[in-house]
Amino acid sequence: MKILVSIKRVVDYQIRPRPTQDGLDVELSNVKMSINPFDENAVEGAVRLKEAGVASEVVVVAVGTAANQDVLRHALAMGADRAILIETPSVVQPLTAAKYLQAIAQRETPDLVLTGKQAIDDDAAETAQMLAGLLNWSQATFASNIQLADGRATVVREIDGGQETVSLQLPAVISVDLRLNEPRFIKLPALMMAKKKPIETVPAADFAVSAPVLTVLQIAEPPARKPGKILNNVTELVAALRAEKVLP
Amino acid sequence: MSVLVIAELDSHGIKAATRSAIRAASQLGEEVHLLVTGNDVAGIASEATKIEGLSKVLHADGPAYAHGLAENLTPLLVQLAANYSALIAAATSFGKNVLPRAAALLDVAMVSEVIQIINATTFVRPMYAGNINATVVAPAGLRILTIRPTVFEAVAATGGAAALETLTATGETGQTTWVSRDLVELDRPELATARVVISGGRSLGSAEGFKATLTPLADVLGAAIGATRAAVDAGMAPNDSQVGQTGTVVAPELYMAFGVSGAAQHVGGIKDSKVIVAVNIDADAPIFQVADYGLVADLFTVIPELEAALKA
Ligand SMILES: Cc1cc2nc3c(=O)[nH]c(=O)nc-3n(C[C@H](O)[C@H](O)[C@H](O)COP(=O)(O)OP(=O)(O)OC[C@H]3O[C@@H](n4cnc5c(N)ncnc54)[C@H](O)[C@@H]3O)c2cc1C
Image (cartoon, rainbow over all chains, first blue to last red; front, side):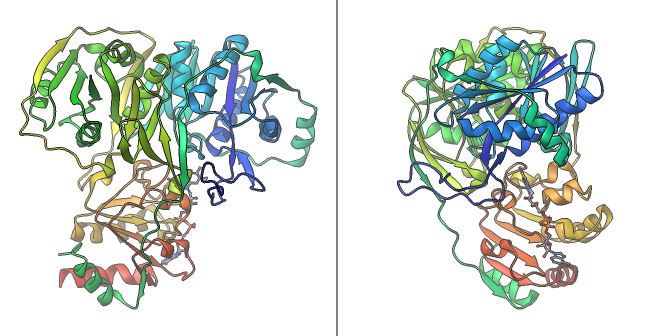
């Protein structure tokens, strides 16, 4: 069984993003970038399936600029077998990404596509479902447990107020939650080995992909909350909350 | 043309989040229709005609729609889309699961988690755990949106008089079968819609400590109990109590954070609360930057004092 894992390079989760001067983008120069945390869970999930003998090959794919080599190397160091970069001049929106991934999925014919449930830059949570639709494959979003057997995937999904279990016919697209697993810590030998693994670069122009896009008018910090007050004790707190009319 | 809101059902009928989506839909300035799908839900569909602000309720019934599976619902949405200028659902786990699949098939760049509707094509949505707001313009033609239910007040469940139309079901695709659902039984208000939410962090120490410390105060306040991801990961609180960027977004009148550091991913989910209170032993904890009122103190002394003060 072959698993394709789609990953995205995003501003590291510990960095506080700032709008650029022109207010049309987030400042990305000299900012620490990392693999999207949820995608890291997807890579970990795929590698564990390979280690368990369920999967035979794990291929990672990223859509974006040449800079994505670093996150692809990261995934290779985690245990993926090979990597594909669909090289685009800039970061693409979910529908465009889904169409490139569709093209790669049609070429690679995996049994399963795994990816994070959302990217922590746009927080859109769209790409996996879009890809499943384009391929006309089954889908499961927000997965916290995946079992593969007999050409089907049994998936536990995190839903509002609890969990749900669904059984998917393969091939399928599954987007994963942080709870799926704890990604491994990469040790130096694994990093060295990853340097020898292949990264194939495919220019975006090789695929005849076109998709409608959203036009960004403004990127801004949300209005700040009014400054707060540090109080001295519970009596003051209760008085303040009663004055705000949020306590009886 | 009109806009179509996709209803989400639970055991009580149409969810409040759907009525928030209707409020948002009405801001697009066209007639609003509601699509009710499910198995044997004629009663719910006819009840839905009373929801404020609707001119029509479309009802499609059949076993294929029983569990809201995206694979089975999408063909119906694609079929209906031709008659509408927008498809809208609440950004719940249901809406987020179904609408992107339909958007891809309709070749629409959708807008997710809308928090403000500026005009029929211009929307504001949060990014980067709520650290950034993006104002985006969707291309002309069909728009597909999920809206954040906490920022659009739900329309009333009664008072309307919409027409009811029955549709032919598109049927089962057979790709995915639903196995089971495990919902946490709540004996207190639902997190997403509670008027008061009290949250605890990893500092509560254990599942027993979490419960024993927060439950009595939640009872006095009639509050829902939330948790940080660290507390959830440590097994102190159930998954669905996680508040934040990747958990539940809340916007109560009062949010109280006990022993919560205030990481961006947590704060992203509480920013729209009317009043935020933080109790933390560390005066430099980032949570104090968003709190309206803070106590630099040990939560284990503050909580019993609060309870006593409120009972007095
Ligand atoms: C991709 C991603 C998504 C995430 N999504 C979320 C999310 O949705 N929600 C979320 O919450 N987190 C999320 N996180 C995790 C987040 O970054 C933080 O790690 C987490 O919120 C920290 O939880 P905490 O405040 O309980 O723990 P800690 O960071 O350990 O902080 C504990 C706090 O308690 C204080 N404290 C200790 N003892 C006491 C005491 N006796 N009385 C008072 N105060 C005390 C300490 O001073 C400290 O500030 C996410 C992380 C990632 C990478």
